[in-house]
Length: 84
Image 1: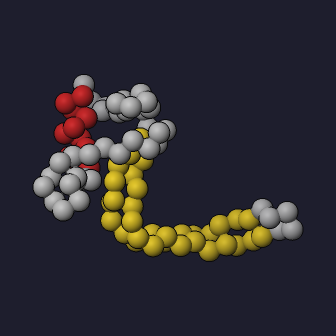
Image 2: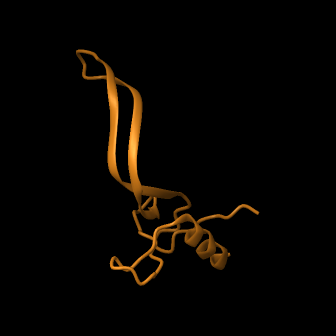
């Protein structure tokens, strides 16, 4: 069964995973007009939050941690199942 997201704030349907950490990519080419091409990228970090890709509404799952919420995919799946 495919789970679908419906944002409680704006009814958006796309989710966005936001990570903290370092993100780098090589710039391969820059022309006189400012257009540029990227090469391979690398990314390190941890999942920081899950939010609506349209309005930025952050999904909060209480967990008792210092930050007050838990951002993980297992919790997201369980929450989405309750919204159906």
